[in-house]
Amino acid sequence: MGWAIALHGGAGDIPLDLPADKRQAREEALKHCLDIGVTALKVGRSPLDVVELVVRELENHPLFNAGLGSVLTADGSVEMEACIMDGNTKKCGAVSGLKTVVNAISLARLVMEKTPHIYLAFEGAEAFAREQGVETQKPSHFITPANVERLKQDKEANRVQLDYTQSIEKEVKVETHEVSGDSQLGTVGCVAVDGNGNLATATSTGGVVNKMAGRIGDTPIIGAGTYANTYCAVSATGKGEAIIRGTVARHVAALMEYKGVSLKEAADYVVKNGDPEGTFGLIAVSATGEIAMPFNSTGMFRACACQDGSSEIAIH
Image (cartoon, rainbow, N blue to C red):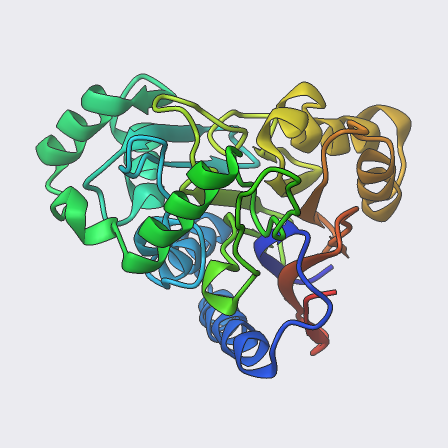
């Protein structure tokens, strides 16, 4: 048994020929965030602190679909959501519909620790953020030129774009964009376990491009995109509706708890037997320090490290 950590920057149809500079930028970002988490675990920070710390860093990075990099709804605004959960206590907090909060994951933790509730959304969540004095910005702070263009292109193509959706050919006279590094955005998440088997998970996202205003995905739903107990901690990424229908994160934990299978067996089974219409991936760690990072999409931006010194940063 020893500490372990894994994080992701989204799963989806990531092109195999992703340009070297775009690949390098994301790999460097993943390594930076992984190093932050490893350092925190080494000095004895709790897994809950670690996953919040790492996801905050990912939210502050414009290359990923969370926080500063959040994609836009059909009306051109951002609606960010996040969730955090402690495995031992099963305490959890979630938020949705945020337009001004810089770090949604930290507000989710405050919901967990400072209210009798689990989930706050939209104006109620924004009011709570102001009450708690968390950092906020004007909504325009989160609206980047790259995401404005991405929304425009998806409206023209009449589609809702999931993480890493590739350009599509239309018989109708509609031009769609080619996937560039700047459009390679993805939900972010982190799972961690310390040397005593304490587990935690955190996930944050801006959702999907051109989503209806008010749409809520899997990320803030306990048991769907985010879940932790005394067996494992899980963070999922991909097609939110499919992840919700499959209660993906809880399914992994349930297989371990009730069938007695390993983390790898449970995670692989859930990904392999998920909704046939939905591609997704997940990261997970067990109480004994196992790591699993399966996906059924072309790729998933991911990184992990263990106390034994092993580590990995990968895409495909």
